[in-house]
Length: 135
Image (tube, rainbow, N blue to C red; front, top):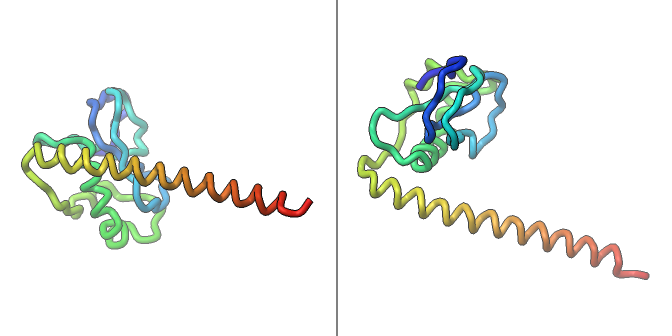
C-alpha cells in the first residue's frame, strides 16, 4: 500500500481508499480502479503482490475495515497510511476460491440493490396513496 503519487499510473484492479479529509463511511470505503490512470494524493492505493481478484480484495478489506477504523483511526478525519501495516485480512490463497466468492457476493449485492429499489418504490407508492386517499 502506498499513498497515491502524482502522475503515477496505477493499473486496472488496484484498490484504493480515501485517507485525507475522509469520514468514517462504513461499508464501501474501498473502491476498485476500473481503468488504468493517475490518482489524487488524498488516496492510498493497494496493489497486491500476489495474484488477487480485485473484487475479492475489496470485499476482504471491507470486512475487516470497521475493526481497523475503530482501533487505529477513531474519530480522526484522516487515516494515517503507515497504520495500514496493522490491517489484518481473512484471506483465501486460491484464486478460484477468490473468484467464486467475488462472483457470489456480486450476485448478493445485486439482489440487495434490487430489494432496496423495490422498497423505495413501495414507500413512494404508499406516500402517493396516503396523499390521495381523501379527495
